[in-house]
Length: 154
Length: 128
Image 1 (cartoon, rainbow over the protein chains, first blue to last red):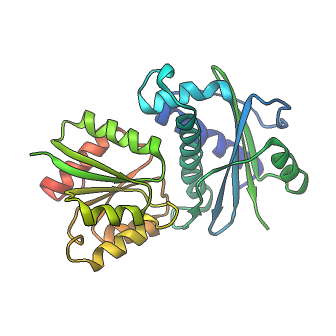
Image 2 (cartoon, rainbow over the protein chains, first blue to last red):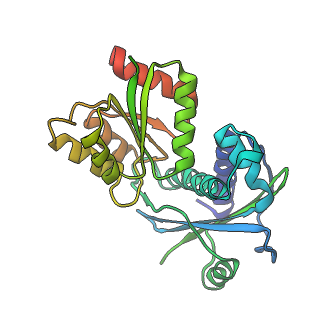
């Protein structure tokens, strides 16, 4: 797969999963961007091992989390706890990762995906210094943007 | 009498989504139990009668495939119907779970898929 094809696949899978899980519609934005220097984002990483190993990193605007969580659980935004927002974001990254990898490596490939963990923007920037992502995309949602980076480990 | 169901998933939000889907399904529900991994689920099975297991694959401590292997070793648990609800995309692993008797529902799912899969597993024995 070319870099453009990988970006397109990541964009497609992320959009589809947001729509299916939480009825959230996104607009593909761009692939040339850097992590924003803002505290208004939450960053998570899902490590995976299989025919190729690495991680899928998500940086999501904090403002998008109430809508995501309410959409997944079918409850009012006012009823949502901080823990539920964190869990909803982790589960969404897990579902994106689980659906993305077979589209890249084929349906016979077996991957083990670890539960997503929180990472800091500084850790993400450090990772970007030493590793070129295989794919990266930014999606625009009503309340803010989501950015994904797919990294392959050596 | 409703079905007692054990939902095993490391995400509390996903367990709630499955419960919501079950509540919308019209299926007769009894007690709903929850566990965050296979080990916790096996301990729950020791204490509660369960008619149906809804099981994720990728979980910490003991994953869904390891749990099913353990269940098959125990005569008290080996015949409990299992629906695997997972992001798993590997046909190889899905076939391994199906060979142990499980049905498979891919995440993300709709309430209709959950309902049809459970109905077909418990009533007709055929794939939905």
